Length: 418
Image 1 (cartoon, rainbow, N blue to C red):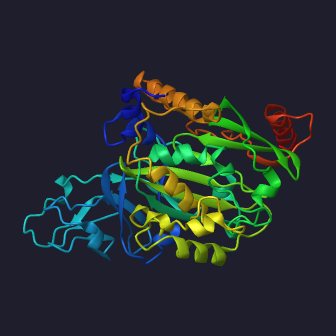
Image 2 (image 1 turned 120 degrees about the vertical axis):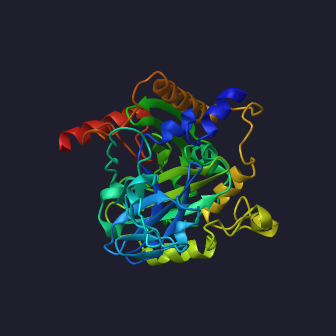
Image 3 (image 1 turned 90 degrees about the vertical axis):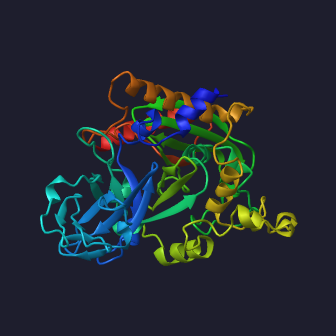
């Protein structure tokens, strides 16, 4: 259980806040590349309570600058893309991708060089546009497989969820909730992963343990009772607001999930879907998403329609545990959004499987304190060896093995292969 002060510390992310400074010390995804193709429209972006506009100029260079024109405050996301920048519709002021004013057509005595404009560096990686909003020399974006693997094998999506970012991150690293919230009849396969999860893992809650790593925290979930006997998942929390959940049998791949605050009451959920050995069916993934995510980037199932819960579906032999369809992200959205915009963690009662949540709180509080002590944020990528101790695994293991022993074997094999 957190104190009110600790809860405030971890959930407030605006400019100048300790958690905001922590999150700004890393590259953050802000849009899927598909949302802003060459020649595409400017994209309004709200991130950590800052209103920005992402655009490609007429030479396909990406820029991220403040959304309101520094002249009289008009929204630049409506602007024209021309002449090497984005032009405000109100008086024609023109700004390049670095936020520099390069034209003031209505001014007889131009003062472009004295116009202040907030801007942030951006880069494209893994089907997403990333920005660095911190101080000093930017670190590197980690070379996770879901970011650097073959383009045909990965797909990136962004969805808006109407609650604090921490609630989203808590959900993705929680191994126990999948046993209930996402339960489906045995013999039915997930549309997104193609796996019969109940058959592989069984329906009993897993034994959960954690350990710290250089990149955040490793999470072991050991299942008993599935068709595979002893079944292990090794997932990870990744600094500052990411996670790498597994997506099926060993070797099939793993996903990246990032939970980036739009403000303290909403966040963007990024999915980096990836398969190791085969292309993903992008048409099927897009179709399934379009059926479940509205044009406003929110889930079709939402609080306003009570997540379209069907209690007949809950009771039927072929139905789901929660009666909310088969789109797992919408089920997760129900669980985290109904907690309130910012959950009051001073009143919760954590159980044994919540060791992951408690461990993550300690990890985050320690990281923020480290920065308040004047040190660099933990886990920043400064060289290519960042992922040397990274393991993400799902599959059956021998009866004599447990999570840590299996992880040591995988790390030894990884080192030998290198």
